[in-house]
Length: 111
Image 1: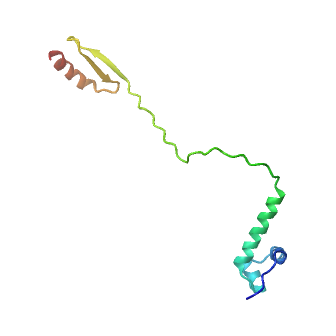
Image 2: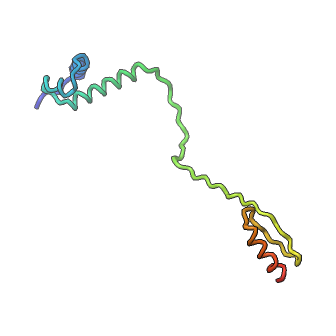
């Protein structure tokens, strides 16, 4: 088992790798190390560097926001009423077929 490589050693390796212009696979092959581990350390050290450079602002807790909200709108139905001679009222939707209403009215007036 190989001894654990120090953080400082990984920093040097990552710097040399980035300066080399080689891919992680090519550079790792030359050193005899795992390319995935080299990429991991490159990511980890880069992230830490970016976090250290960014100004720290206190995080505010956000209120829990549901990921999905269902909104239902009641359909607007426009109607009008026709009062028949016998006192009855007929509600007719705005989008009606006039020819059907014309045939229906005499039947309703009789009953």
